[in-house]
Image 1 (spheres, rainbow, N blue to C red):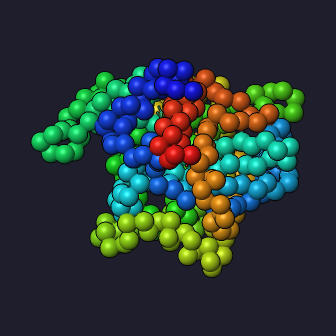
Image 2 (image 1 turned 90 degrees about the vertical axis):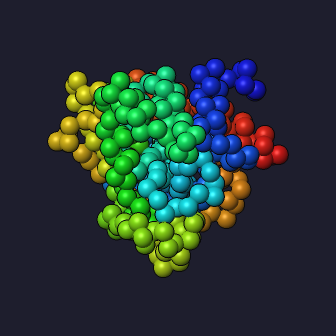
Image 3 (image 1 turned 180 degrees about the vertical axis):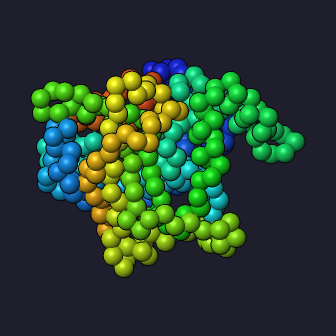
Length: 313
Ligand code: HEM
């Protein structure tokens, strides 16, 4: 594959990310710095009536988790308000896999891929200040009012004590298919066993630039780190095609299971080279009609090709 065989909008989007935030050869075009960990997911059994997905029945499934800082720069300091990712690959008994990719904000900045490109334009650095022009970001939010929520949430993202003390959302709606073939929309959220714990800006500034990965490795030496998978069940009329719009908070939820993270993976290079793709689903789970969800797979393919080419692999 080369750029000509990719979706042109995906190529333009990754070009624009590079243009706005810099190019770092060999790294993911966003979420550049990360570390991978061995884990096990144990289903609660509550999801089995609602989806036939193998990892949500009764047997534990091995998982490889990648925690990441969302920045494009792999040497950025962790001690600032920033996106953090928890990408989970469930290694299924039949040799296939399914991915669940989540971040520390509940909603996204754009309802469509085209809107995301517009948003990137608003983030271009003002040469006078070296930072995005707040007026352009405000103009974007005025033009796309539902995007304002993600901007607000991003403004109050905690600076975490640990990757293990953050709440992560998969943002998009997905569709579960139950044993009778009935479909219902769902949204996923990981809740940390420790509860949320954050640092003050001063405490964070005193930390090592890469403290989050270092902290997690140390924490695991004392025992596993856990997250509970909560699943919100959508109702008739809840939007499934728009990641900027949350569902009402009173929608019913189930606990689908528990993730127990145990140690860094032995082969970091192998796992760093993977693509955690939110469209890698498994029977019992379908994609919703969210256009951003489908688009991500095409953008990630462009990023993968560029990072692998520049890594010389
Ligand atoms: C138009 C929308 C989006 C674009 C263009 C985009 C772009 C990208 C790209 C290029 C990568 C690097 C892929 C790779 O090289 O493997 C990436 C990674 C990632 N994205 Fe997105 N993204 C979008 C939306 C989202 C959303 C809505 C979420 C929320 C869950 C998200 C969460 C992540 C995470 C956690 C990673 C790191 C995955 C890993 O650890 O490998 N992204 N994104």
